[in-house]
Length: 406
Ligand code: ADP
Ligand code: ASP
Ligand code: MG
Image (cartoon, rainbow, N blue to C red; front, side, top):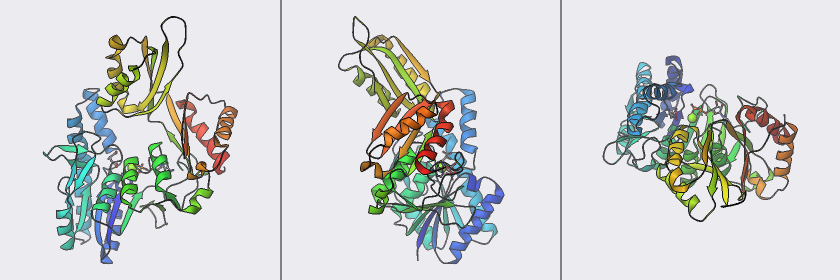
């Protein structure tokens, strides 16, 4: 009997009718005799609204309480989905993350899964039930509710597929699969039949929110092959799997734009050993992920000083800024400049390993658009640049047209 893990995202369960449609699809698989575990997200907009409510009360709410708050979004959807299945005669049981045996560390709002003991899931499946699991949430060994970072229902699905040794893992969303870039911004984006874990990982961590990047990391580590497909039609989706030889023939697989970045610049930092270590240790201790770092050469006469810029996720800007300001006296830099007015544009492709000229063509395309480059970073299979937020989509369209066709 095949075991299938299906995940339905926020839009797919966005209203009662959509939840009924999802139930209909699940019923079809159930009627074939498959064992089905369904992971659902909060209904679209619900998580954002809960965050907004909390921030109306205070700008930097306690993260433990945020997890208690945010986990209610998914808890609503599991019950509604189970009810929708009951209404069409399909036996179904809803489980919270904790009830499904998802154990995490205690880093609230971005907890990591430590292990999964899916005993109750197995028991329910063996009794012929469809098991509906709340995405995005888990529990620490001592019973605290945690969440897995935005988009974390993807991770719940992939991790459950690995733990249950599922035969199939399907990620249902509101587009037909993974495209060369966000099809909502660039209508000429093309659907990919397949993509390697590494490319998907880069695209995801660089802003293509179709998959949460940590979920792709997990899938790669445990070899979970998964399909991204639409909950609104029957079209075949995109298969995400290990790299094959033929994939290298394509230089650029996709383009991503991340508008969720913010930049902090420390002006005139004393240029001496240990300073960067002090800064990034403090930022790391506050559990803020740093992405790009750029340090300029020393300038001016007198004591050598340098400007140091780094990027963080927008929601972490306030926290990061507070940490840095707390170091000003000790380190003695002149000022901190924090801005949300940036975007990160990235080109990804395993073929970049063996092809040259990508950077040149990228910079030329941006120059023709009058887009200034603020920061650059590269890896074997990607190039990322920081640009002004307001020029992000224009640059994305131009770069997609240059590399992947209009
Ligand atoms: P879900 O709620 O199902 O998890 P998300 O909103 O998190 O869905 O992700 C799906 C969205 O990701 C799409 O609606 C699309 O706008 C966006 N997206 C960004 N980049 C891509 C891409 N390369 N391919 C497909 N979708 C993308
Ligand atoms: N509801 C959570 C979010 O909006 C998790 C998810 O949708 O995957 O980030
Ligand atoms: Mg998502």
